[in-house]
Amino acid sequence: MERYVITVTIFCAVITRISCCDIVKLTFPSGFKIGTASAAYQVEGAWNISDKGENIWDHWTHNHPEYIRDGRNGDVACNSYYKYKEDVALIKSIGFDFYRFSVSWSRVLPTGFTNVISEDGLQYYKNLTAELVANGIEPVVTIYHWDHPQVIEEMGGWTNELIVDWFVAYARVLFEALGGSVKRWITMNEPNSFCTDGYEDTVNAPGKVITGIGKYLCAHNVLKAHAKTYRMYDEEFRDAQGGKLGIVLPIITYLPYNSSYTEAAEVAFQFVTGWLAHPLYFGDYPEIMKTRVALVSKSQGYPRSRLPEFSDEWIAIINGTNDYFGFNHYTSRLVYDDPDEELGIYNSDNGLIVTVDPSWPLGGSTWFYIYAAGFGELFRQIRDEYSNPPVWVMENGISDADGVDDYDRINYFYEYVREMLIAIKRDGCNVEGYAVWSIMDNFEWSAGYTERFGITYVEFDDADTNRTAKLSQTWWTKVLSKRKLQSVPTSTYTRTRLPWQK
Ligand SMILES: *[C@@H]1O[C@H](CO)[C@@H](O)[C@H](O)[C@H]1NC(C)=O
Ligand SMILES: *[C@@H]1O[C@H](CO)[C@@H](O)[C@H](O)[C@H]1NC(C)=O
Ligand SMILES: *[C@@H]1O[C@H](CO)[C@@H](O)[C@H](O)[C@H]1NC(C)=O
Ligand SMILES: *[C@@H]1O[C@H](CO)[C@@H](O)[C@H](O)[C@H]1NC(C)=O
Ligand SMILES: *[C@@H]1O[C@H](CO)[C@@H](O)[C@H](O)[C@H]1NC(C)=O
Image (cartoon, rainbow, N blue to C red; front, side, top):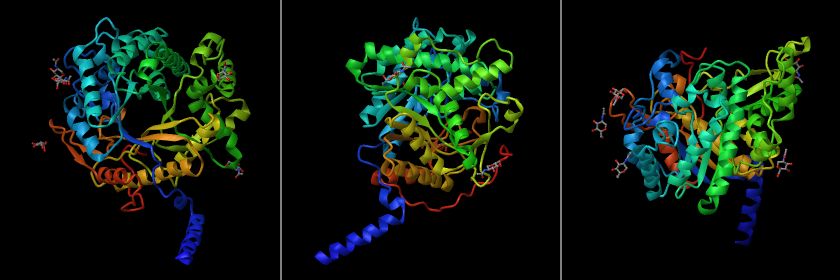
């Protein structure tokens, strides 16, 4: 017996040296939360029911269908406004710990302001929250996921600083109504995306092209609105409700094109993640951003930097207002220094060229390249940059064009989640939660219904919007019941180029 034990021990020691995966065993740490996510405009439908007001996505898709690949909109989407009980039953049957959903501002406040609070609108979110709690699923609520009231956009939207107080008033209504049950809040989803794609491009609503200025102004007001909401929660709700508040950033991992460009990758990190996160953790924008945007602005003849400045008062309000580090991650990029800079030509504020490794397999979206190691690297970057904060992955997943036999999706989840588990167990990254995007196929913004991110298939061409399990849903059900990654049915990607992938 003695001898047997010794043999086993030696055998295990040899095994563990073989690879990191044996060390981590691919089990989830105890207490780790696994959930799934959606967003109001992408799933709810019922766009004009009861007294709901028009939001910027209603307005954008109705007035500019030419900016949506299939010309469609979220009027019906997944019908989740009517099917929320079915949605919750589905989430429960798969075994998720939490459900991240967002609230539609104009459904709750039809005029945009608190003078009118929609009874039906608020009741919908109360119902959904109660249904989740009754089924043992933790509600995680995004206050703003890209769809502010159109009337607020008529006044400049995120480029008007008055939105700070309007947002705080809206958030207060939600804390009052749902804060008894909701203990994890997300103020805004992906400001970098909606500020850049909505205020410097026609990719997202409101589609205003204010080049070089729109995104910075938008993010400046986003940070103020986030921080004021956080301080208001501290003063009015935290003692009684004891929840956590954070912002969720969209993070692409930037890696050096080759070993000559480690500095370039660091600059890219600061320009994308640091832009929003540095103020929350250190009070102000990263130095490199302040210096570079000032330099390029000057070369363009502007009297001052296009990057706005925070007063000392605002720095004190914003500094330290993220209870956890929330982010969404899908893909990676390679960066190198723009050679034109040596000729004194500034093609961009960050002075970088962004590219990909041609060997990376494709997802189903124009921007989607698969590189799981980039996900692992991101946890280590966040650990090192922000003193290992508690981390929540609030979206991770992959798109395809159609079908329920989604082997590529299972592959993606396996490879990416394995990287996360290695970052946790081998590298000590403080990751507490992970959300699968998405519980079901839904309205994919400017791609309409041509790209599917769900682990559940939705029949958008039928009024019943029926849901069907994909193989990845079955796979997640098994992973959740064992709390351990399960082997993959196939280990190579099969995706071919889609018409919108040049
Ligand atoms: C709501 O919008 C639909 C189109 O999505 C339209 O058919 C219907 O008449 C509208 N209902 C009301 C009450 O305006
Ligand atoms: C909320 O639930 C109640 C009770 O089941 C139901 O009568 C009501 O229609 C629901 N409201 C919404 C907006 O879902
Ligand atoms: C990195 O790439 C650049 C541009 O192709 C090249 O000039 C440089 O020599 C490379 N450096 C290394 C260390 O490979
Ligand atoms: C931000 O807060 C941290 C921690 O309290 C503090 O050390 C730092 O000095 C603050 N930064 C600024 C710019 O006030
Ligand atoms: C959708 O599902 C319902 C309930 O199972 C069923 O009665 C209906 O026929 C289905 N619709 C379609 C178009 O398959």
